[in-house]
Amino acid sequence: MQGLWPHKTVAMSEITHVGENIYSIAGTEVPAGNVFTDAYDHIIGIDSRQREMVKEASGETGLTNYRNYINMASNMQKPKSVVVIASPQSRQLTDIIPIVDEYISPTLFFDFAEIMSEETGYMIPDLKFNQSVTPRITIIYTSSQGHTHRFGPGEDFMTDGFYLAWTPAHVELGHYYERLVCVNGQTIREKCKDATVHKLSSDEIRKMIALVKSKQFFAQGIEQFGKLFAVASTSRISLSEMGKAQKILTVQGVEKELAEELIPYDEVRKAYERAGYYDRRKEHLMKGEGTVWDTYNSLTQFATHTTIWEHQDHRRINVMNEAVNLLKKKPDIVNYIDIY
Image 1 (cartoon, rainbow, N blue to C red):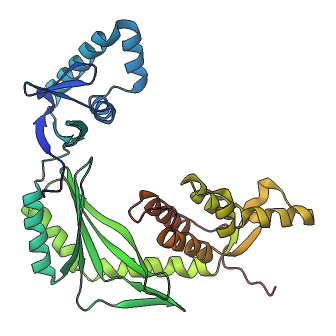
Image 2 (cartoon, rainbow, N blue to C red; image 1 turned 90 degrees about the vertical axis):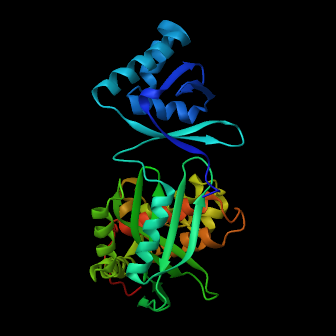
Image 3 (cartoon, rainbow, N blue to C red; image 1 turned 30 degrees about the vertical axis):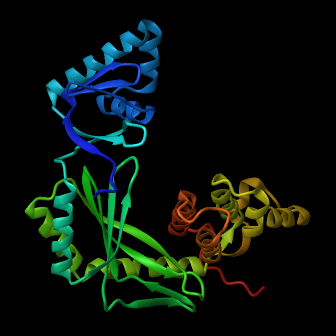
């Protein structure tokens, strides 16, 4: 818990905008970043258009008075509690999180995590802290007798695991797939959320433990991913899907030449143009190169192995998440038979 940025639970009524990026919290004035201000305005119901209109008409002082009035009025109708987060480096407020039901302390979360391990018999091999901005703790659980499920040649899935993720406002429970992506044992982990609770009452704790212990918890996930594999591995990717897959890379800053090498959208499109069959409106009907599964593997393998990004670079996760979204969507060209 020492790795988490400082955070504190306060009532919204205790927060007052002083001016510019200065806020008073229970009488103590603290500077804040733009992310905090945007989140604060969102909570009290002020959008960017309203903010600009008030500032243009009444200046910074008028905007300050407007913020404090809206905050006071909304809390008279329905009092709210929030968690404010500060950076120890910049010594300013960085974010504000609304409490949906009640504040969940890290101590209470770790007590629950220990109970979950004892009740299910699962071990905790990994624990991760998000040390900046929004506090987040993720605990990974795995079985000492985990099973490997194979859906196709060379496609191994280790699915016998789950995770708990904490923020001050909620606890998330889900299962995960840990999939081999190459012969040297490199894996990627794909998570699937199953439940979210906004308080850790004894009733909610019992429900989540019962969910993990039920036979359907892992079976449903295995069946779901097995179906995705079965469809994706027998579905030729369309030219349209190739273009979207290549864009997944370029949006994250991958050079066009490298993206084309991984997903040869331009090459296939030009082949259709040379043959006189290309129609931009019909890209979703044109067969691309390989299957949806092949393209999914190209994206995840790049995200896992590339040396152009640092190991912890968030762009790796972004590419993996978009690859999973590609896998989950209904293919343009389903279950084809082709002798060529």
